[in-house]
Image (tube, rainbow, N blue to C red):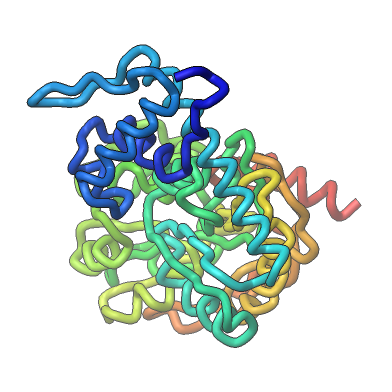
Length: 371
């Protein structure tokens, strides 16, 4: 067939070929895109006929990409991504805050912030189809950059090129201890006290684990042996209640996680306390960027009742942390130490990449902001 008469490939054919190229299995590829296996096989064959090249090497046991198939699979994915972006932009222009918004959230944020997020969306954006995915940081970033997710809610900075951060707030960490621990219920705990503690941590892959280890290193503790870990904060706190050690909790998690046990005390660090920054993250150049910025501004206002430092007027950060400190958080919470320290101060140390800033640097930043 001459080039002048060769038909253009359809999107369905490209989608079928891209699925087979990804899974290298007709049944799995058909299931992934919701197409019957015969229809998928026919679409790939039609694409090969339209292009005049063999894309796949078929055997009775497996499917392989031909050399031409390997080259054209990249092109097919690019075309499908471009069409997806076109549809996304058209939807955003047609009616903001409508259609699906796939939000990825880390496990150490989801239980404590999602109630505020869901209430905000229900009240202010009733036509928005919010779809929530709870995953660890690495999986979320992969989902964002691949187009599987639209927006992330997680601890920053990420340092990922092509990802823009919309800072929401900073929050301090507190020390949760068993009832009989010498630091339980204390205020003004120096970070150096972490050197001798049996600190319980989350499993590997959680950003909060990395934050805790960085805080320990900043306090001068290099070894930080790990003998007991947990998959979630709820289990971690119950291990503390059972006397196995102490742990660090972000302030937003404190009330919910310590309410389940009367065998806990809460200690508060001396200023500047170790902290983390939580933000939205989106792809640079996202078609719905204006919507995400508006959602971030609305969420900052909705979070004022939480014990966090809202980052007023925080601008975009392209793969970097940083930003101005904001207003004060809400009342403190503690399981047993009923009288906590005053609410967080407006001056907030900026956390580094999933970690607290060293005390000296934080103090220098506070001095600079006061000047």
